[in-house]
Length: 293
Image (cartoon, rainbow, N blue to C red; front, side, top):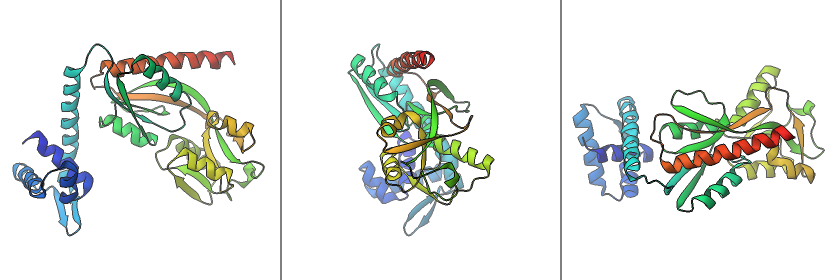
């Protein structure tokens, strides 16, 4: 079994067809088909359910997929460990939830100190970002904490308050059951906190509309389409200019902590180590500011 066979296998799973996988890998289709057949022959089992529109991974294929992810991730980790230098360089892939107020300051300071690092930022919801860190698709991620997983290390960045946000003068808390909620997709930490509160209070929302970006959500709220839940720091300017209005949530549902997570058992490159140091420095500064308020 060759490492490249596992890479091809994962791409076929991702694309759902041999032709699409071949196109993305710049291989001829017959080569991809042949390598999948080699895998199936070596493992003495089919890995896909074939149909006219493509291929769907079966239960045995799912077993192999877990091994394949682990093996290819470890190989990439090994390469990075030998290529690592004393200074920070190369690429750093970082996941983010969109409303981390401290992120621009951290990134700006890090870029000033380590200009040779290419930062790649991937936005998403907490659950998916954590899974991508575990799968070694990301070097680390800013998410809503705390996270309870044996393979994850975490560092608190900033503590904040969640608030409900509505169009100015168009909503009261008595309207919770009749007003649409505009939320991030499932897996968002803010949404999870809101749903926990509503469950305890017995609140059943009339309608939930899912969005992928903060800009779309807050623009729709300002237009009077519905309400959302968001860190208070993200809407300070909009509240001050009376574009939107904030409404307090009860404790403990309003308290959130943004954390930075990375995989516990992975090799920490000098680049990632310097990035974590930068986060710790800013986290300490933010803590002092909050203590002095």
